[in-house]
Amino acid sequence: MNKTILHLDLDTFFVSVERLQDRKLEHRPILVGGVSDRGVVAACSYETRGFGVHSGMPMKMAKELCPEAIIIKGNAGTYSKHSDIVSDIIKEQVPVFEKSSIDEFYADLTGMDRFYGCHQFSTELRHKIIKETGLPISFGLSVNKVVSKVATNEAKPNNELKIDIGHEKPFLAPLSIKKIPMVGDKTYQTLRNLGLRQIKTIQEMPIDMMQRVLGANGGVIWKRANGIDNTPVIPFSERKSISTERTFERDTIDVIKLRGILIAMTENLAYQLRRGKKLTACIAVKIRYSDFNTYSKQLKIPYTSADHILIPKILDLFNTLYNKRLLIRLIGIRFSHLVQGNYQIDLFDDTEEILNLYNALDKIRERYGDKSVIRASGMDAKTIGRMHNPFNGQPPIVLAHRKQ
Image (cartoon, rainbow, N blue to C red):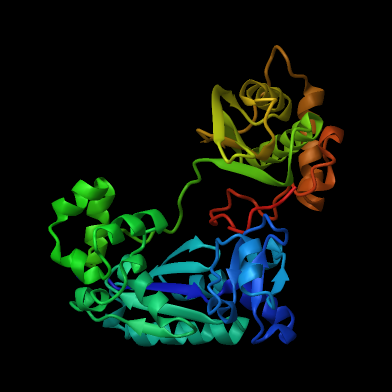
């Protein structure tokens, strides 16, 4: 049986949510993201795109290209709330549903044509979302995820596009190679240097030629260019790691400040582990210096989710990695090798009082927020904290880099 895969994408989601809250922003050029010069554009309205602005661009450059744009910092909690409303509507309507990002969804409608036209169903679902949320949304419908995603991007803004079975290659052929999912700036430049511009040219090439140029990724790109994709719609994907990082407004060598931020980061991520009933067995610290050289170091440890074990190890890693002669632009930490489990007492070091303390602190945080109780040494860290449980099965919220 041929599959029927629906891809839904909320148009300029962060911008659309801001406009829901303030109707004066309608038809105005909007940039959402880090408000400082070192910030990054997380989302931009269509009104800014004629100036060459796009998401992922440094905010400083975006402001230079479109000086009349209104800049909004953005609120992860607000965006999560609206995303969850859309998720609930889709979940009620479709048999198999995947949330691949805060504003992007897939649904497997295979077999529904026996009872109800998939295209008609998708159209009615889209209209229902628009009516109940006030948010614009586009969709693409085809036999697989890749073609449906490309179709959605071609349908935007606030529209829909169905690619009939057998028409995948003709649909893709005239499009730019940059429209292929997985082709980023670097790969695009490599392909352009080979004289490739349209997807049609890749379709006409043998797969082994693409593999010689780009390795295994070349084969994947060739298949996607030909509309071949067997990736299933996956309702839930277990998270393998959890991380956080901060970019500084000004490069720094203030070790006290750096240690305080690392402590606050570790404390918060350890709480997230306990909140999700997870343990980590591998920790890592990342440092990016003012010259943009980036270094990281990791350490395998016994499974734990306890602050008092993790913090000293993170600080030790930082001390090993840190070059005192250079200014630091960014620091980050990452916990990986995650497994299900609760923190268990260490018979040699821990006491019942320590375990009861963690229990009490976590209850306070659960009720009043991540930052309601923090160590004094981490109080100067301004932006540490999360708006949601990272292990609730939802994809992470991708906003502009938070600044310190």
